[in-house]
Image 1: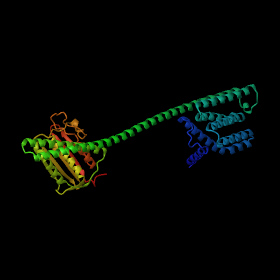
Image 2 (image 1 turned 45 degrees about the horizontal axis):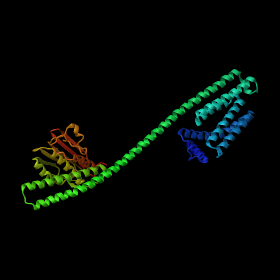
Image 3 (image 1 turned 90 degrees about the vertical axis):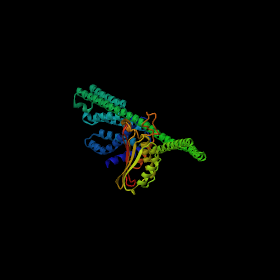
Image 4 (image 1 turned 45 degrees about the vertical axis):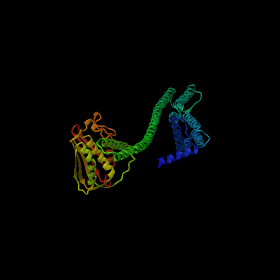
Length: 462
């Protein structure tokens, strides 16, 4: 409660002086010095008001009228400086400092070393160092030393008789005053050293904040640039795909038209087959490039529906039967599910995933090889797909890279069928979007096994 009351009081005073939007000084250290002075000044007024009545009461009882007048005048001056709005913060500091110096000198002269005058002088040198500067703190100590020197001269030459001089010999006063000055100077320099270290820390912190701010801006700009680049790339690929696919469809259609209107012979059919096969190859390639671009930019939506797994696998077997037959590859299916088993997922993406994996298995298997499609029932809400081949396989150092876009496993094989290197990358992205994980096991020269488990999309973990 006291803490909240203090903050409210301090905030009120800042608003009272109209300093809430004032930047004080340009550097951060001066800003903190000004804020510290406001805290000291506001606290002094509160504590001064609390101690004023007991102080003057004691002064009256003890017949210390100088203390009564000194305290009253000092508190009145501080109140005036506190409430007078026309004073700048710098003037308030000067009034505060001069008032306490004069009060301290007066108390030393009236009460001697047993009063609180020496303590006030010491405290004031520390406060001046904190809210002004090291130079001001040193000057305050020098002013104190000058005051003590004048007092010693008065004592030595007996110019004026002051009561507290009778408390001890002259040499004792010299030692006490000298110790007070040295200790005050030591404290000022210690406080100054601490302030300098704090200032260095502030500067370093500002530099780090600026660096972080610049790094953050660079990161945001890079992110925005990447997003713009992705959008441009997707738009470019989409446009290019459209521009290339349109004439390719024209080529395929023209080839079919020529085929139907040209006398059938083996040579012509071979040429037409080359046109059709290569045209379809190009179309598939551009479709893959466009698809991987969409996946990277997160622009692929899911269409969840009920899938009859047996029918899906049977359709894929029929689709790849001709391609497997051309290489004399034995393509078989091991279906360990009920023929009516269905799963909620995206049928188009699951079919494309299996198509890419099966296509790779056939593509990278030699003549008279085997490709087996396993479909294993796990539970009513999950199924496992495994595609195994005994083809060329993948080396261990390449195994963790096969899912990367455009990665070609047999790049060194000049006679190999490389493709675009996008099939497995697309398959992996699709499976992850559907809530699964793609796994690849392989040994060079022994073959490859690609597997993944797929849960009912409505039952998958969030």
